[in-house]
Amino acid sequence: MSRGFRERIAVSLLGAALVMAAVLGVMTIRSYTQPASTALVQQGEVSGAQSGASPAAMPNAPGSTQTSGGGSGGVSGGKITIGGFFDITGPVDSSVERDTVRAYMQAINQAGGINGRQVEYVWCDSKYDASSAHACAQYLIAQHVLAVVGITAPLGEDNEIKTLTSAGIPVIGGLGTPAEYRDALSFPVSANFYRYGTAIADEAKALGVKHPAVVVLADVPWVKPVEANLLNRLAANGIAYTDVEEVSATQASYTATVFNMQHSNHGPSPGGGAAPSYKCPATDKSCPDYVIAALDPFSYHRLFDAMEAANWYPGVLGAGLDKFNVQKSYDGELRNAHSLVPFLSPYDHQSNATVHQYLGTVQHYYPGQFQALDIYTQHSWTAAMVFTAAAKKAGSNLTPDSLVQALNSLQGFQTGWSVPLSYGSGAHDPNHCFTYTANNGAGWRTTTQGWICS
Image 1 (cartoon, helix red, strand yellow):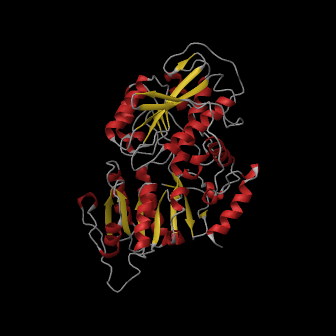
Image 2 (cartoon, rainbow, N blue to C red):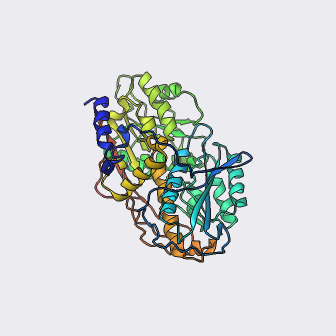
Image 3 (tube, rainbow, N blue to C red):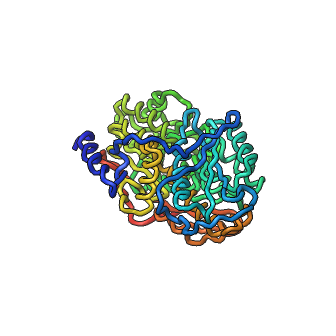
């Protein structure tokens, strides 16, 4: 079945309200006007967006419309101010993660707010730059936000967790960088990236991978321990990789990277030990048999363009491969692609209530972002869910302290698309589990029964 034919089928299905956004990969976006209630706020080079009205019937939406006066630390009268920062300018565009949180909060406001208070969301562009991320953290502190909800800034967010929590501001969600799991005021919702290394290597073993080439994003400092864990776990699983390529998100072309993966064996030594590298015989065109990739969604695009130019189509194993507005340009790379995710995939879980609400709400308010949805927007949506549940539980006397108490009291919180999340005193690491999806060229499908936890 051709891609164009699949798209025509999907368009007809997605025109119906009950199957809005059922299949991300073949969606044709309708044109909507962004809500007039979403206002832009400017302060120097730092900008933010205030939440406005949006659909009702959201998860955790309060039934009460009572407004409480007073408050402090992001709470004043009938308003709650929260914030986040996102890499938008530069090689990584995380504006879709920002707009996912905004869409959720607009829906909450339409449903009456949180215990009668409306939520205002302020945001900042961290520009894929560590200094800008620090400036964003300072800006949010100056705005006296109650909490930071949903940050996506690969180059800077790990350093700024402590900046925010030292100011008494809880951080909910994030990419899953190491610092998020070491701080009592950080409340991650996803699996630690360190666990991704273990999970990818274990999936490689399950798939029967023998001699993969590995490519990782190396301009993000916190990726180094993830890379080492991945390589060590591959070795422990008896998988000898042929090459390790370290690349940058700002790298314009991956042509040389792909050439090296095809022909080289110069893997680094994880932890200073002997690298379990393997030299492919010159006559064995099936070696390397896989590419194991730990990249951002935009770098995948450059990698796959280079693979296509080289007419090289090994299996691909990674995380976050299913971002539609990037993967729609993939070709043979999807014929044997595998991706792991810490949430249920929206591609084949359209009947899931959380998936349905997530897709429908983002499409309604930010239709131009719909095709950009990815695994990291699921992080953002889940962070918004957790914040709302805790803020509602804290009641009318909402303060940073009461919010943290409410967050720590969440036990077995049902997101609807992940394992239940539980918090408590001390550092938090609530999600150790993944599902695995595969694509044979005709779409993504979940290949595991239940959750695979590490």
